[in-house]
Image (cartoon, rainbow, N blue to C red; front, side, top):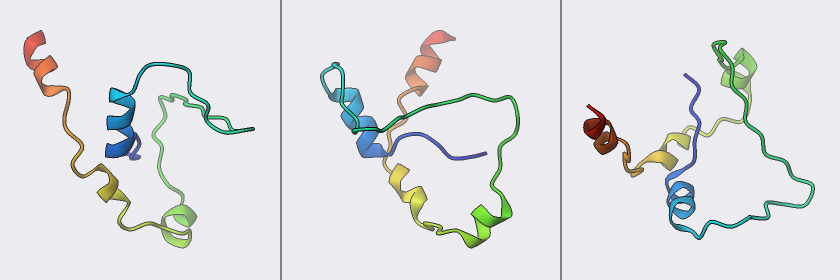
Length: 74
């Protein structure tokens, strides 16, 4: 699996802010894509690039917001 998704602070800010158009950055572009293919890191990306070995910590404390919805749908 390839980790993805917003960090705790980003999720909470986006979930509680007023819904309105947001300016991101001049000349910037954000995009998302879907694929049915398995994605994995290349050896270069996993061994030789600049890795943040504590990146996983940005998701610590992120509340699970979906368990109640799953229970109600059953």
